[in-house]
Image (cartoon, rainbow, N blue to C red; front, side):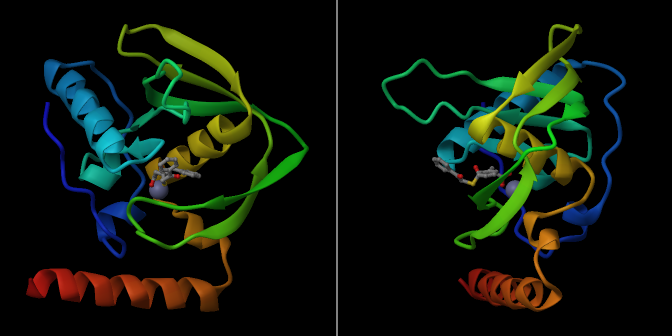
Length: 173
Ligand code: K1U
Ligand code: ZN
C-alpha cells in the first residue's frame, strides 16, 4: 500500500466530472487500498478519486472517529443518491484538497446512497450524521464540485488566493 499525494486546489482535475467505473480491476483494488491508507494518514474521514488524480467514480470513507471503536473502511464506486431528506443539517466542512480552511455548508441531513462495491455487488444504505455529510462531500468531488462552491464568490476567491499562495510556497521548498 502507498500513500498517494493529495492534489491541492486550484487544480483542473478537481473541477472535472469523473468517469463511471466499468470494470473492477486489480489496479482499481490497489488504488482503493492506497486511497484508504492516504485518508487515514492525512488524517481524514473521506477521500475521492480525483483528489489523488484518479478520474474514476470511486470514493473511500470511514467516519468512525472514536479511536476505541472498530474502524469501518468503506469503498464506494459509482455512488448515487437515491433519496435525500427534506430536513437539512449544517456542518463546518473541511477538505484535504483545501487545507486548514473550514466553512459551514448546509446539506440534506440524511441520504440513501446506492453504489457498486469491490465485491462487484450493488449496495444501498441510508446515512445520517457525519456519514451523510461526508458521502455528499465526496460525491460532489466526483462531479468536480468543492465545498467552497457553496460559498459566496468573495469567500471562494479569498480561499482560492490563500491556496495559490500555499502552493507557490510549497513549490519553492
Ligand atoms: O474529501 C475530503 O477532502 C476529506 C474530508 C471529508 C469531510 C470532512 C468533514 C465534512 C465533510 C467532508 C475530510 O476528511 S477533512 C478532515 C476531517 O474532517 C477530519 C479529520 C480527522 C478526524 C476527523 C475529521
Ligand atoms: Zn474534500
